[in-house]
Length: 94
Length: 137
Image 1 (cartoon, rainbow over the protein chains, first blue to last red):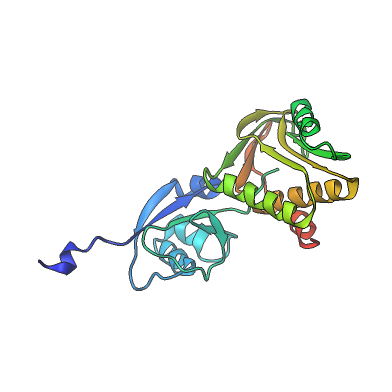
Image 2: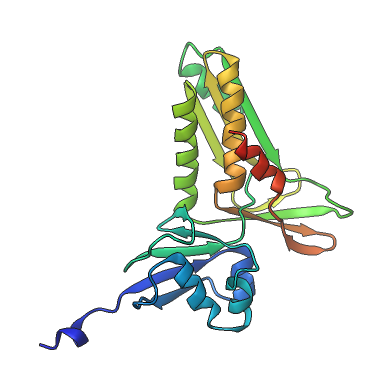
């Protein structure tokens, strides 16, 4: 059995909320993990690499908050297979 | 709100103090009339975030009761958005905990407000004053 081709791809579930979701015209997408993607910062770089509105939002000029598995995190937070990573504007509840 | 207060009274007999805060949808903003507001949230994380804020408050103050109720979806101008109520033996804990909970909810809980006004729709921006308020805790 060829173990490489049988290995399930490691994936992240990426969620976008509020004005980010509207600007990106996307509420959810899957991202395949690679050796280059180890942290939330890496995920942001990868998204910025798509160009267009993704680049505008994830290049660092717009304030984006992040959560991994429904906990607020900083950019250094590691990510791993199966994680839910959410990006959103500063919260405005209450 | 009345039912929450009744629950508090029927609960702990030694609650001498009950404090509540209600946040409302404003009817007017900067030179516009607000017709409605939509509250978006992050299902799953919203509940965890509010539970964590409540737990921090309970750890820091001796509280007999805490209620945090936050509405979601489309709300008309003048409607209630959020209720925070606390009950404790004496008033200092109840007042401080309610303020603490609101200051943390405003900066950490995953909700986003979109105002529908006479001039169109726009997302409400976060305020630096909310972060300043949280940092004093």
